[in-house]
Image (cartoon, rainbow, N blue to C red; front, side, top):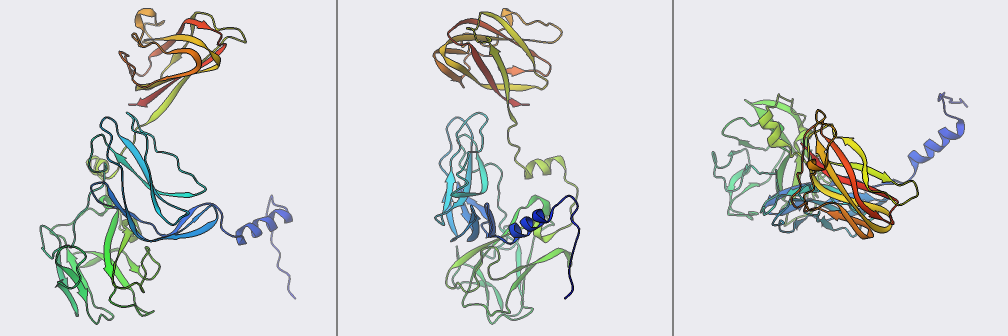
Length: 392
């Protein structure tokens, strides 16, 4: 019997065996296996295709369905998460509306995040997504794309349309039967995210049957063909009598990239706020903090202050003013205060937080110096002052 050996620099035999066992063990962690594409429909409604997924090492499945996000806040934007859970259900996790919203946390033991949506104040639709109608009522260009059916393909069928009155119907479909949809003008594929189809099976597909989708420019194939078959994109070829959503990521067509203008890039991507924290600690060295100037902090970037948080080592009271000036005018003085009458204060407690900042000068220019001055203090020996800012 021949013996197989190999070298693994830096690894012992036990290390190699452990790696092999880990590779052959049951999956752990959380991941999407198939389906689960999230598509914006209208208003605050999203549709999620059927999915198979793993959460904390266990496999689950979910049916296609819709989820409606909560109405927008009247004052501030928020970020919502859409995902799947261990009950096989679609869920939404509302974020907290704020001037600079953060994506909410989910429970990794019971939930799998699929995507998130930015909901602006008073908005009736999420920020960013928009749909282009390819085929709805066989209206042709410019309302839709011009549809031409090949053998046994009726592009003007009224049999079981999903919405409206028309659909594309295949009858006695066999190899090579096709439909061509043509846009009025060339489109930039890099500005698209999904190709979305709704398919209704009259009967179960034969095991050799599949549907191929491709893009062409002046009759020439562009990129790669993508196949729709059983268990791909959440599609079941044995489900009959109802429509199934198939959402294919445009990236999978491997269409050659072209240069994007700044306007095109901005239209494709939603820029989320760059939120950061500026932290300053005042430590009395075990004794109650005394009044007076406690130090300075240079801010190297332009930003806007949105919130101040104070955290003390023990219950007590403290008032800390913040002064601001340029490097050229250093040091800042009391005349340079940015807090007006709303000076950061803890009163007989261990913490305080202010998101209103009434009267504050919240704008900071790159290179500004912040000086922290204790107006008064009782009991507290250590306090952390955190400024939440949005970088310009």
